[in-house]
Amino acid sequence: MEQAAVSERKRRLIFVNIVISCIASSLLATALTTAMLPITEDLNVPVTTGQWLTSGYSLVMAIVMPLSAFLITRFPTKNLYSTAIAIFIAGLLVSGLAVNFPMMMFGRVMQASGGGMLTSMAQVIILSIFPAEKKGTAMGWYGLSIGAAPVIAPTLAGVLVDTVGWRMIFFLVMIIMIISFVYCLLVFSNVLETEKKKFDISSFIMSALAFGGITLGIGNIGTYSFGSVMVLLPLIIGIVFAAVFSTRQLHIDKPFLDVRILKNRDYAVSVIGSMLLYLNVYGGTVILPLYVQQALGMSATIAGLITLPGSLASVIVSPFAGRIYDKLGMRVLFVTGAVGLLISNGLMIFVTIDTGLWVALVLNIIRNAATAFMLMPLVTWGASTVSLAMTSHATALLTSLRTIAGSLGTAIFVAVMTIASVNYGVDTLVPSPSSMHGVNMAFFGMLISDIVLIVLALWGTGKNRKPQEQIV
Image (cartoon, rainbow, N blue to C red; front, side, top):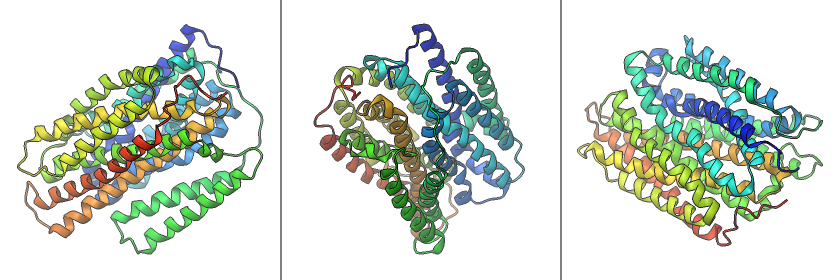
């Protein structure tokens, strides 16, 4: 597979379309964190169930992304990309009109199905149409859509919830996606090569059971004890099918998702690093609004506004991170970002209900800047160490695993916060000491993952291969 031959003008038009659609789809990944409480109250479900609106979204994306590796090489680029947008729009309509939780969840499944394809395709397209020396910069700007948008989303959602209601979140994103759909029909072209190959339904089912079982088991920890059937059974099913799926991919001529690329040390490090990063990203995005609303008793608008400066930090840092990657490689970004996360999460452990809200705001700025240093560079670095022909498999596998990690981060840290709060003692006070203790313990859990991330950054980037040295 050769570098896609695309004119500079066409490259810019396609890139803008990708950014628009991915900003909209990324908004829905975290927008409901701020709106979760009013949604669960309106639909009459507990928060532990409501959190599946975010973790379940990530779960379905993780199931769809391995499928995208097949779809990208099987169907024309323009047709597949526009279809993914159309599915996302249909899901937005269903959720916006939802009258109960199953209907809402069905809409979220449709959104995740479209969003999963959009995310995987976007990265493959960018890495295919841009020359090696510009990939880092391009992915840095693209990083604004999947990095800054999820952080801006809680702020926007909080304002909408307190003014016109949570349903407007879906209708606003729908307007953006309709614009993107029309734009796609006008400017997109078939920039990726395709080939006729048989769909391996057995591998797809195995991957769905593997990813779904593991995430479902972890997600149920917040509702059931770890030793319960509702936790252990899906976990066991997921682990067993993950092993069976991986074994099958190693022994067939045309793998559904080629896991053999994990033998590449640099790529494996980028995958593990991305997973640890997403544990933090999604965990913090959920816990911070709950800190403001449950522990401090403030409004959804305040919960959203507290994240706004952090999102601005992501906007500023992400393009520069891409340029630094193009010039210096991955190591400096990886180590700096991991240390930044360690500092921000570590200090949040000591925040109390009497601590000024500005402290959490500043720490969130550090968190988001650190995240931007690693988010897209890790993807670019991982993909740059495999052949161009394997780019779709590399991005699909990395994005799938990190999305699962994000889903697990949401479930794990909400569970940690809930369990720690209950064990501390139930209270009805506002501000709530027990809720604050739960928040502290959730950030302590993130701190542990940050220590592992720093070790990985120091050990895993020793060679610091230049981005231009992609294996062809």
